[in-house]
Image 1: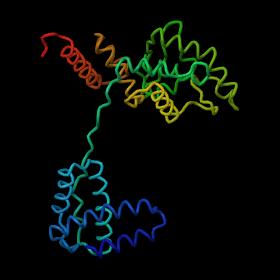
Image 2: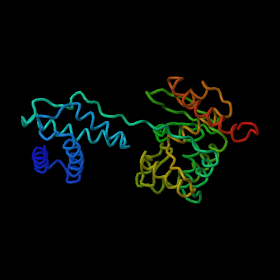
Image 3: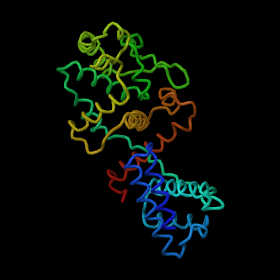
Image 4: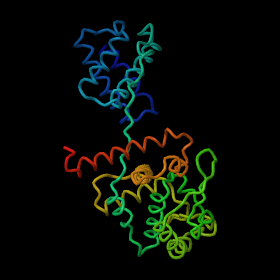
Length: 301
């Protein structure tokens, strides 16, 4: 086993497409696997069986290793076994029928309302970028839009006089999304003061005439750029948690449902095709109501 893995690592070193960092990762994964196999007496490649690999993955889980770590180790072992089959060290690949552990998806928590307020007030509105960031955050929380929908907005999509935005949603489905007074104020000020300044500063400002949220580099704001904005303002606001566009979308839905909004109305505002997708937010809202009850009612405990 040890000579086999050494030969494999030497083969990787001759591959110019694999970086030194990647090779080091494979080496560390396979060393751990080799140590585990030697402890149970598997010292020859021909002795390696699927249950040996499966028991190794189970051991990783018992040790508290994450599913992502176990999946990465399995990927390294798979590459080794494919090499073994090609090089005729193995008659068959013992990893073929083994499924990689699936990482649990952690549902993002809704922000506390006080934290939302701090985040929305963090941008410096004395600058065009600050006016833009305040407007974007206000719109995201006011509408529950997906970040892709927010960044695709054009100036013509804003009907501040009616309190609506025209949103091109997933799958080409369009919807009208209501926006509240705070978002309307932030948008109106940005469009009259901040946006013209950003367009004027841009080298190709004429090409951005329709874009609602331009970047200072003279193009439509990107997903990465907006993520950086949220992180920057979260730090300025002193928030413990690091909010994301999705957590603001979740906060929009949960806070509406906490205040008694109709589930189907929230579904329509979010652009969900299935009511089941919206119901996950309702569960979070109910949990929050129960938490408040337990905290505040004199006979709850």
